[in-house]
Image (cartoon, rainbow, N blue to C red; front, side, top):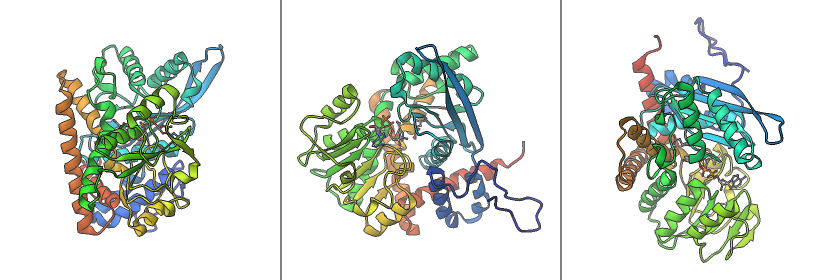
Amino acid sequence: MPAHDSSAHLITHALPSYLNPDDVGPWGTYLQQVDRVTPYLGSLARWVETLKRPKRILIVDVPIEMDDGSIAHFEGYRVQHNLSRGPGKGGVRFHQDVTLSEVMALSAWMSIKNAAVNVPYGGAKGGIRVDPRKLSKGELERLTRRYTSEIGLLIGPTKDIPAPDVNTNGQIMAWMMDTYSMNTGATATGVVTGKPVDLGGSLGRVEATGRGVFTVGVEAAKLIGLRLEGARIAVQGFGNVGGTAGKLFADAGAKVVAVQDHTGSIYNAQGLDALALQEHVRTQGGVQGFPGAESMEAEAFWAVDCDILIPAALEGQINKDNAQRIKAKMVIEGANGPTTPEADDILHDKGVLVLPDVIANAGGVTVSYFEWVQDFSSFFWSEDEINARLVRIMQEAFAGVWKVAQENKVSLRTATFIVACQRILHAREMRGLYP
Ligand SMILES: NC(=O)C1=CN([C@@H]2O[C@H](COP(=O)(O)OP(=O)(O)OC[C@H]3O[C@@H](n4cnc5c(N)ncnc54)[C@H](O)[C@@H]3O)[C@@H](O)[C@H]2O)C=CC1
Ligand SMILES: O=C(O)CCC(=O)C(=O)O
């Protein structure tokens, strides 16, 4: 039901019909997170409604010719949640379960994340409801190009800059950059990030999100006295984010004991060879059948004996049904929105430290920012320089959030929202409302 301002003011807060305040999916999770931060926003709280309404939502029909000559239609989205701090920024997801509610939530978490690490962007996200594994390479390219043209009125190097997310990669970004450039008549490398290095991509971007997850994990482990040497790690999702994070923790002396992905769940108490597992996933499409591991039931994964749990797949994976069984001392959210608010409370009561997505997985967009800056200046940095700057930004942002959490006696998630929402709403207040 739309909420009306019952006062005598002319202005109402009636919600647009497409926004459901009782959403039980990712958007609902995000709304609850905003409600939790509102008491800490002081006078900026009067602007908080801005965060509950995406600025722009574009829904597009994406028709393509399939290899068999038939015409298939796919539903695509680009949502710009908030543009107060700069152009929209956020990835594009190709997945069979993509919904508008999900893309809205993902775009909102981008606004929070970009403000939390202080990169000069608003938040945006896109997606197509499609299982890309069912498409040929030609169909995938046609889908990507048609989608890029359809959202072409919103994106651009100074307007909104897409990047990879689930099931999208450097090749998809190359097609997006090429399509946008052809449509506008000039090569525009800065229209997307996460491109191949030969096309204006940045060294270190592929590993950046996982490296950021590792960096905040190391910082938090020091703060709670958790030794990484020999620490047992469980990872859900062994793609770009989970695979890199797992490998970096293993390189630091930890043991990756359990991994779950869309093909199955595997376990080895002595530790899995993370590099070999990455290669297995690359060639076999998933963790199933990895030599030297036993398979386990999907539900048993959540109760596995471990010190650190890294959800790095999809939203809502840690919920009221499995949170109680989690044995880890620390959860590092590589995925966006992997923990529901009920599960957050259960983990808090159990004394499990949760490093929230909006800071823990911000390494990807941080190096995307570096890529965008390098594209504008056509001057490219070394990988060492990129990694050093990434680690510094992640460490400083995390230390700031930790301090706010201690001072206000709130979770790291609410602390990150406090820092980020203050930045976003202060920018809104300073810019004002009128052209
Ligand atoms: N790629 C990036 O730079 C960033 C990604 N993220 C988030 O990290 C998460 C993973 O993204 P990527 O690694 O980029 O995607 P990816 O496509 O490389 O990997 C996704 C992984 O999730 C697994 N997965 C999918 N459905 C699953 C299910 N039902 N159960 C268990 N596992 C499942 C897949 O098997 C795969 O291992 C997403 O939530 C994404 O939004 C966050 C920040 C940046
Ligand atoms: O690199 C980017 O611009 C955004 C990556 C992304 O989609 C995310 O952080 O969730």
